[in-house]
Amino acid sequence: MRMSAEERRESVVRAAMIEFARGGYRGTSTEAIARRVGVSQPYLFRLFPGKQAIFEAAAERCVEETWRVFDEASAGLTGEAAAEAMSEAYLGLVEDRDQLMMQMQLYVSVFAARAVGEEEIGESARRLWESLFERVRIRIGGDMKDATQFFAHGMLINTLVALGFPPDHRIWGGFDGCEPAG
Amino acid sequence: MRMSAEERRESVVRAAMIEFARGGYRGTSTEAIARRVGVSQPYLFRLFPGKQAIFEAAAERCVEETWRVFDEASAGLTGEAAAEAMSEAYLGLVEDRDQLMMQMQLYVSVFAARAVGEEEIGESARRLWESLFERVRIRIGGDMKDATQFFAHGMLINTLVALGFPPDHRIWGGFDGCEPAG
DNA sequence: ATAGATAGTGATTGGCCACTAACTTGGAAG
DNA sequence: CTTCCAAGTTAGTGGCCAATCACTATCTAT
View 1 (cartoon, helix red, strand yellow):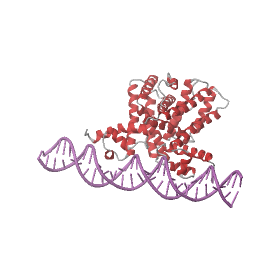
View 2 (view 1 turned 135 degrees about the horizontal axis):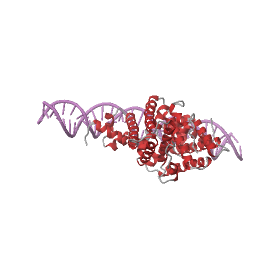
View 3 (view 1 turned 135 degrees about the vertical axis):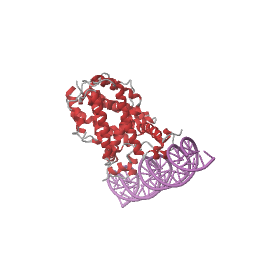
View 4 (view 1 turned 30 degrees about the vertical axis):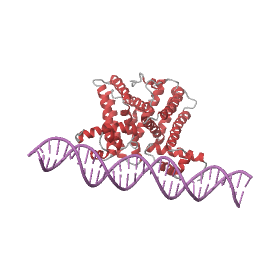
């Protein structure tokens, strides 16, 4: 039960990814996160300065995790082969819906923050996202349009998952062979 | 100042689109919507049964509006010409960020609702979205992959807008000539 | 004019939630 | 075994917010 602060922070981040993915920033209570971790709600505030810090940690982790998936799937590959491997890996993430939804929650939360003048959050999120974009772009051969297509399909997948289209629905039919067209 | 209930409902829907787009469902208070409309907060509950009904009206309007933009832009066109016209029109919507963000808010809110077991919301949202998808697909010639590509690019645009990448940022470079490849 | 309907407001409330403060428990080193 | 620090808890607070209720103002038709 008892663990080091560092280990606890780790569990909090994992729990927060799930809860924030489902409820969004405002729709998730620190109580819910704490319950999932298995600690009391006030203790979260010993581990993190506030709710927003927890969200930021979860968001950053989410992007890192996404790259890890891409990196492993495309290890040793380049160009179109890498793109195909990564596309397939991303489609595999559809099972882990929370991971994909945490991404979208990051996007809308950044917009909300920017709407009330907190532009620094936007800047750091853009850096994070662009860095992922660049790593993917390099991996698939460096072409800008290929990378754009790759991410475009990813974002559509996120949307279909959010809306809950089942994997056998005809709407998914447009994806077979939709790897970046090279 | 004084207007019919129907007219008021209309202004509420328009105001709600803006507020929900920026704050999300949980992050938007009925007070904020009422302030934007210029009426008292309790009056909203005479015009709509509850906050959720306002959100649903705004979401539905948002999808209708999107089709209207596509329809006007591609009037009299078909196939690739229609696709190009509609792509351009959608890029024009980047200026009206609230419209695009309301879409994303719909997606994440649907997921949140589904996560707590309210699947009917998901069903109606899917019907709405699929109907838009189908109308676009027909308009651009009926090919499933073309339609998928079209929407994929749209979803990526939403993301870039949410994160606040300025229009002259290099990340937008992959879009020129990225119309569905026919 | 005035009665009835429709548009609209002010005051309030009960519940939730981020965050704080003060206290308790457990374990490892001397 | 005790001392000390880090891990963790219980109780509480102030603010926000959806929704309700009782009320007022304005239009329209006779």
